[in-house]
Length: 421
Image (tube, helix red, strand yellow):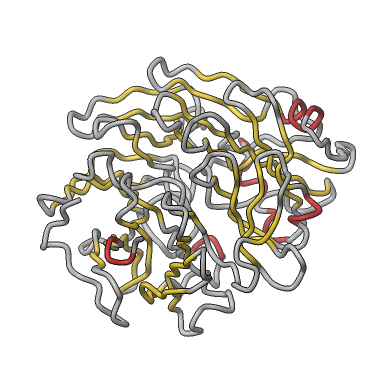
């Protein structure tokens, strides 16, 4: 990947590798998440979402921008605008199989229905997709998403914003809502599995009480091989008030399920009894068989853990190393990369946090860079925080991350090649 010298270097706290600011001008920008790369498949471009403002929650119909950055030429272009975004994941902007495919969410404000968009950023040609965008398959042909409207029932930041009266509520265990799959060529969407089907057929099966709890879908993602997928379900007591952003009330329960791409062979990978100890940010190992996450497995502090897709073999990866942030395992099988939340014990206490590279053989830790992440707005609402969400490029040589520099959100690229095995 060739990054033009027009992109300024980030040099605060002496990073161990070259770090470039990809959004030096307007700021207000973010890349999506730690499991999708903002870098195009060829490495020539980056795509970021630009918020219209950073100091308050989005209002229904407010418009953000899809920005294409030419890394080689050192310039950017607004290639689309969208009403389908939230402050943590933006519009769930991500690349398809080539530099000619960008996928993101939008909302029809006449009906308040969300839908996906397939955009060729080089020509401007668009195709409207029936379903929402959360995570594309490795070949870009399909996209997974839970109900983009109901995501805000459990947590702000990850779906789309519409008037509250337009947000469905699951007073019963839904047989007509769950995990959807969209064909990015035809634009057609179908319900892959319902919440009711997952909870009643997963092995091992969970105790389900739809009389006392409301159940909603949330994260979904394919493994690197496209042979299996993750679907997470969250639930909370029906007497909770208000019934939006229940995460802030600390009443949520969680479970992670895996299944084949056709919705069969549903397994409970991590159940609520483990999540209750404290945990977050599940992801696939490069082998497509195992999952990684942060989990307080022995109730002695968060650790990086590994578990097979069927829930077997749960254990610590590095028993004596504290977990944090959004961890990913490098395909070399030797290194783990992650960030740190500003509130976690490994943060520096001054609004800056480390980017951590760990040797999975020895447990040795390298602080790659120290970056500002805490905003003056997150005290109003936690969703206004900046999560770095470190994400690899397609060759697993560069890492993109978010930071908060000069009073605004910015996206950076770190050249990790000097530190990789």
